[in-house]
Amino acid sequence: MCCCSDDCECRPLGFLLGLPFAFLSLLISLVGVVVWIVGLVLSCICPCCFCVTVLVEFALGLIKAPILIMKWFTSKIPC
Image 1 (cartoon, one colour):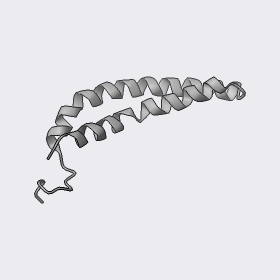
Image 2 (cartoon, one colour):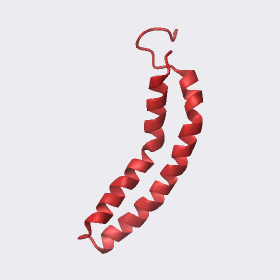
Image 3 (tube, helix red, strand yellow):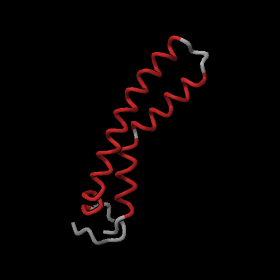
């Protein structure tokens, strides 16, 4: 169970260094949840409005941000 092979997925240093960025992206994802809920309600009221659909897609991107940032950051740190 050594973490020194070429295909290692265990990068504890990268994980620890990425935690502050993950926390910031978690806050951004909470904003994304609020925008997603408002956009979803607006798209139910007026489904013909295209900008609301774009807003909901943007909010979903914000919600997925913490996971994507942690994966990106840990992939940049060598084992």
